[in-house]
Image 1 (cartoon, helix red, strand yellow):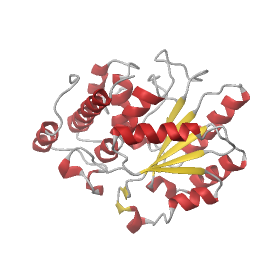
Image 2 (cartoon, rainbow, N blue to C red):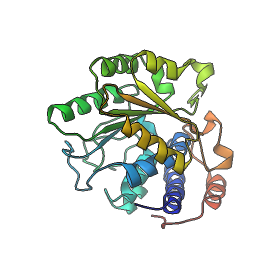
Image 3 (cartoon, rainbow, N blue to C red):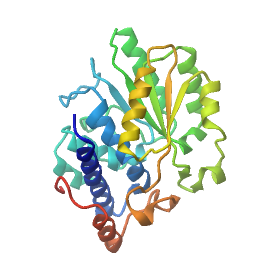
Image 4 (cartoon, rainbow, N blue to C red):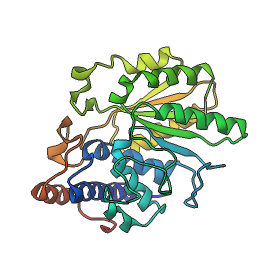
Length: 281
């Protein structure tokens, strides 16, 4: 397993990738991507049991589904740097005929991508279906999913949350990127979510929180704790308290960088705050 320093170095390089990808096409979603960099790093470098010899059914492997698909830059960077496809392909992000669309798609056959996730609110349903398929196939692997907090304003998400508990889908760990920001402002201003922990618990889920959601150590500990709670009759929810735009000082704690690309000067500042570690693409 990689050391904490190696995971931190990996995260730093991923932040550089995110900035460069979005800047190159003046399009994309850096804020949430930066906020989830440590989560994706830990998931793919420490937690998941997977093969880079990619198959859609993932038999005998842990599966991950990204529901808030607009944070594709962090997903693509981590997949590439985990060996799913060449790192140099990151340079094609959002370009014509690329496999790296702004929101992940499946029709181009990009390794690591099992669902198209441009429409918010649907990932929970897909993850539940995959988890139930695992059970039917006597596959004891775990299904993981990630959701935006603003995404939980979607009704379909709560129908799925109710279903997962009712059907005892206890091989599912769903994480909420709880940065309290969305495209139009703070979630409390757009549509308050209330007490998310109490809501998930009322729907029959086992819930834990990672208060330091941008700490490598805290994420490792939190996900391992969540994993220990699987198989006990309840789906598991992690409320991951992250900072939008983490690691780039002028992007942090604001919704302003949800879907805005940095200009040349801003790119240079962001890169200067994250020294190259693994080599740019």
